[in-house]
Image (cartoon, rainbow, N blue to C red; front, side, top):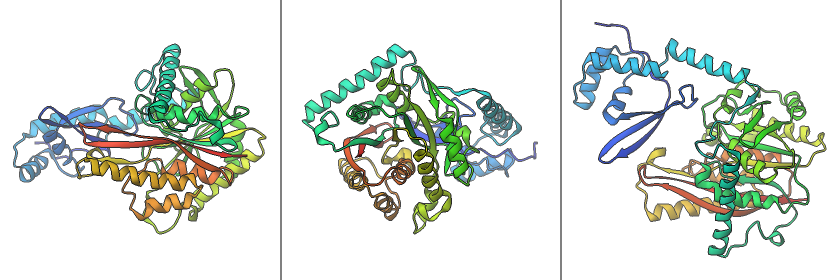
Amino acid sequence: METRPIPQVRPLESVPVEDGSEQLVVLRDPYRFQPNAFTLSLPTYLLLTLFNGERTADEVRKAFKARYYAEVSVEEIDRFAAELDELGFLFTERFEEMRRQSLAEFQESPCRKPAHAGKAYECEPANLRKQIDGFYDAMRNKIVEQDTVTALSPASATGEVQALIVPHIDPRVGGCTSAFAFSALRTNSEPPDLFVIFGTAHQPGHSLFALTGKDFETPFGMAETDRAIIQTLRDAYPFDLEGEEYLHKHEHSIEFPLIFLQHLYPNHPFKILPILTGSFYEFLESAGLPDDDEAFAAFPRALRKALETSGQRVCFVAGADMSHIGAKFGDEEPITEELLAQARADDLAMLKLMESGNPEGFFRFLQESGDKQKVCGLPPIYTMMRSMQPGCTGRLLDYDLNLETPTQSFVTFASMGFYGQ
């Protein structure tokens, strides 16, 4: 009998789903070293949770029986472990090989390839243009249905659009809300030369910021990064910016806003500065602000310095969603109309603080509640608000949510414009 411990399971994304009466769990590699999802029955998932790197197959068998009162053979456990190893889900040499190969492919690529074309949005340019046109049609229909004053009414806004908050949820869900934000840019007297795009780094990392100098390819063509600004930023910021550049490879929070910008300006060759923001968990758990940490505080200072010397028309964009609530995100409370109404009220109170240009109030609002809303857009929005010029006035343009009934979960999202001179 094999006496060596089964290798430990890597940290994986696990999403509970139901298929009829059967409970399933979908596993995904958060770094996408393994690009494919893997679906398990609930009992098999529970078996996987016992692979802690210390138990042998026989010890896993005994622990499974003691904990769940179910039998599984050593041979079945060994076969399952081999399957997980082949997928790269265990800490083994197989995983290290997959990781090295994926990192090398990204480092050697001259550009950042589109990761979600043909999945979350159309991969052919004509079809993508038609798809995004449809989001603007949906926006106009929503305006008529709700009789709302929106970004299509320039008289309601003061000054030029200096910054935007846009959803980074799947465009098929949030595309209409995104259209509200990008419509606001049409009211500017001249298009920006540079878009500083902040995104949420959904994959776990150790740094607060991850920068890449790679150009971004999409079905609409190549979006060029501003390498001169990047170099100035590197020189001015005393911490590492590119040690986790790989996080850009599969991240969607910059890719989705970018295709809207390219759709909006097909004949205006703008440049981008793509910045992923890491977790604010430690800041939320403390009594202080992100600004109390020099690794954070130094970044807006360095960015403003880099932009001031460029002489370009700059617009900030934060690809950011709002609340994440339900079983998919670890909540036990069932989805009810009361819960949806409370989430909306919490979101609107939070968005009001953003509108008033109060990043500290926005952060404290979430900190004091223990971030019960699980706002993944906190890092990019807060960083953007600390980086853009003072005195801008925010204006909520649209707000919506996506309810997933099978997972009893929902995500909220919004678009907002910040106006100034």
